[in-house]
Length: 320
Ligand code: ADP
Ligand code: MG
Image 1 (spheres, rainbow, N blue to C red):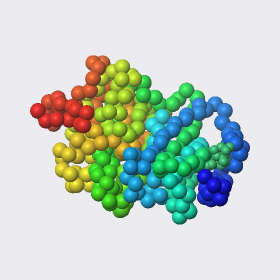
Image 2: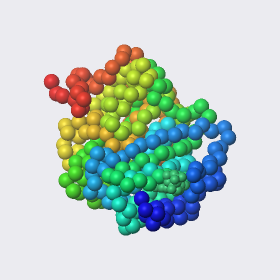
Image 3: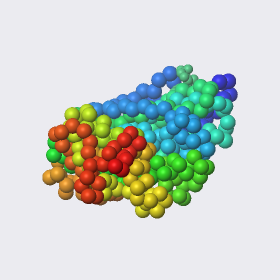
C-alpha cells in the first residue's frame, strides 16, 4: 500500500495500542519487531486464527463487529486452555484503506482488547480481499494449562452457558439481520470468550476445549486426544429459551449438537470436584451444565429422553 495508507493504518492502531500497553511490553508497534518481556514461572500460550470475509463471517457485519468477533475467537482459544490474555498481533488484508472503516474496526478491536487487558503489539497490512488474522498470546502458570488430552474415564462432562444460539444467529445475519439487540444475533456476532471460567478451571478440570465447530465435534477432539469415549444425555444439553422459541425443540438440539460458533467451554472433571466447580462458575458469572460422562469404550453415544441411543450424523443426529 502507498505510504499515506500505511500512515493512516498506523494512526488508527498505533495510538490506541500505545495508550493501553501492558508493562510486559518493552516495545510495541513501530519497529521491525515487538519486544516482550514474559513473566517468570509462566508458560506462554500462542494461538492464531484467520477470518475471511464471506467465509468466516457475512460481509454485511459492520467493521466494529468484525473486529470484535475476530479478537473474541482468539480470546476463546486462550480461555479454553485457562490462559490469561497478554498480547496480540494483527495481520490485515484490506481491499482499500478506507478511513471510516478502519476507525470503526479499531474501535471494535480496542473495546474488547481493553476489557481483557490484551495489548496490540504489532501486525502487518496488505491489499487484497478482506481477511483478518489475529495471533494471541497468553499466560498460564507453568505446566498448568488445560489440554484436550487429559480426560479420564469416569469424569463428568460439562458445557458452559448455552449452545446452538450462534448457529441460529448466523442464519439471521445471513438474512441481513445484524442487530445485536436480538439475543441470537448477538451470540453469533459478539461471542463471550469464557476467560474467567477457563482460568478458574485450571486446578479443577482434566481437559477442555472451546466450542467453535459444534459441541459433538469439539467434544470428539477431547475424546480422540484422551483416547476415551463418552455418553451424553440429550436433555441435559443447555439450550436457551430464545433458541427454543425461535426454532423449536428438535432444531434447537440439532443446532446445539452441531452448529458451532458459540465459543462456550466444554470440559471434563472428576465428579468429586463439583463444589470447586460451582464456586468457579459463580465467580466467573456463567452457568455450567453436566451433559454426560467419560467412558472407557471409545466413541460417542447420545441418549434421548427414553434412554435410547440417537443416531448421530455429521450434521447432528437423525431420528430412527
Ligand atoms: P516491516 O516492513 O518491518 O514489516 P511494516 O511497515 O509492515 O514493517 O510495519 C511497521 C510497524 O507497524 C510494525 O511495527 C508493525 O508491527 C506495525 N503494523 C503494521 N500493520 C499493522 C497492523 N495492521 N496492526 C498493528 N500494527 C501494524
Ligand atoms: Mg510488514
